[in-house]
Length: 148
Image 1: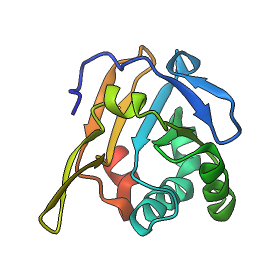
Image 2 (image 1 turned 30 degrees about the horizontal axis):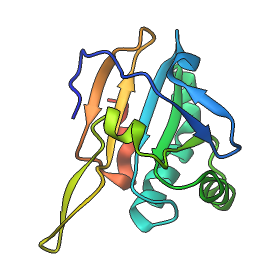
Image 3 (image 1 turned 90 degrees about the vertical axis):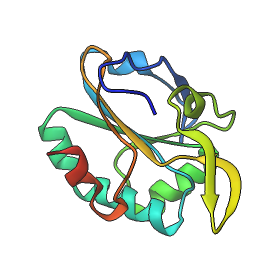
């Protein structure tokens, strides 16, 4: 996991509408960048809906919200439409962003080891510095972990 105080790695990827999104798009702005395993699964839906339900709070505090998973843009589009998500989701199908942010790695599930997305959230300040890193995400109450 990347540490607080480090420069956020540069990224670029396409969102649910196939538009290019880059870290530099958020220069001078605060960003909640969250990584999650899969669209429309119970934990990922709970997390996205918690962020959705508190989206106005994030905006009022000057934060943008951006999700990243290895799902396709089409999958993200369906997820956004189904749950009325007000923020963009990046399709990181080549895992480049996940790996740059150390959100891809070994996972254990019922004793089985496999590679996958490590649910992680980074809060990035206006200068592009990571000011918070959350590795133990409470999917139903994630906003409370971010806004302390």
